[in-house]
Image 1 (cartoon, rainbow, N blue to C red):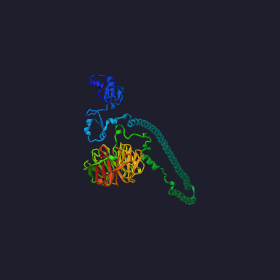
Image 2: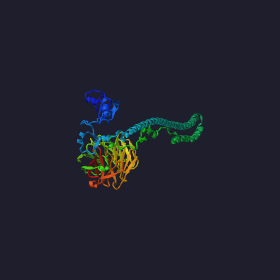
Image 3: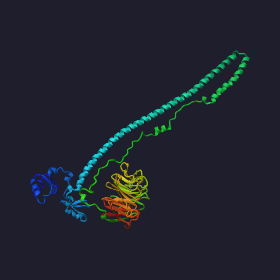
Image 4: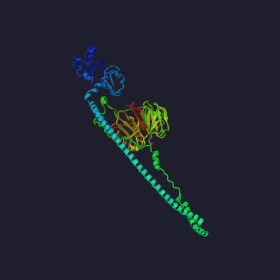
Length: 560
């Protein structure tokens, strides 16, 4: 890009200062009126497109600052290297001697503004804006529904409180009525006894008065006759008093209160009035997608992807792991390798040369392993409901995520772990809040593995010897099943072009399947040392493939 587009570049080279009227991107300089006319009729530049300076200044900053010449050699870009995904000038070719597929940049950009790729970009941007608007509307509707639901729940809480209070008031009233009735009944019994005692006391008092009069005024004979009569009555009176003492009529009556045990539990153990639950249902908002998009856009439109027929594997190293029951493997960014041993419940980290770095032993069941960034790995547990997050620096378990199912094969994607959940199909757990979302509901094997590429998921099913491709909503896109080449598929991984690499446990091989599931090719077999191979991992940054037997050995291949 010229240092000053307001000055005519041609005149500037002639030590003249004239304001430019137009800009030529191919010449990378501004032109005044005279130079513009010469530029338009000159044989070498007459086909160049120019734009007015006023219009040129309207271009986005990133376009204006895009260098059209090599920053190293200050020469114009002429070629494109597909291997290194970069533009090259002629002097750059020295560092690209081994690169194949160098493309003339003029061929690459020919008719670029009218190409399908440019059209697809325009339409995709329109589509994205439309989806954003629709999604915004969807979220605003969700806000409204949240407020409506909040108001509904508030009303329900208040109504419930009213019902509880009414029920408590009724219980209290019933108990108070019972208390009053009991007291009245017992009072009535005691008062009845008091009346009887009062009557009896009057009768005895009359006897006493009569005795006093007889003693003072009656004759001895009269006194004797009265005594005989009274002697007969006194035992009856004594018997009356004794009978009161023996029966419960004279018992001390007490009333007390014992609170209902259930009510006690409510007042002591009830910690809250209820629970506010938050659930996340899969969004019913469907993203609109154009059906006939090109596979690649921008510069990559003209570049072929790696076809499975052209893939070549070069053995970099054979690794003597000395491990048994290997269920998972992964490459770390620094070149180290991680393996899980199912029966020994441990995780082994090997250096890039195959020597042991460290091991974490007996911390629980181990199945598959995946790198999740920041020196952390996630390890599934197979037949338990736990996924462990391991800190590679501290060499210990950082935390354990409890899921609601078994968990076998696993892959990491944008802050989520997508794992094979047995009877519950594929599930996805957030590493931030540990919320779980169902991807598919179809039962899969407890030995299933999963990987991802873009918006696609790929998982194996050894029970029916198949490999399935679906989207992140569980919609099946294709299924590969060919027992002539693949039996009991286990480990699965994918390269940068979407080619799918699968381990055949029973066929003792590695098969690569094209991104559309239509083509396949066996790339490793028993002749390469595979003996009951279990897992593999394609490391996309380095284009290397790690393949591990169930026991003892593993291999690292460069894939071209």
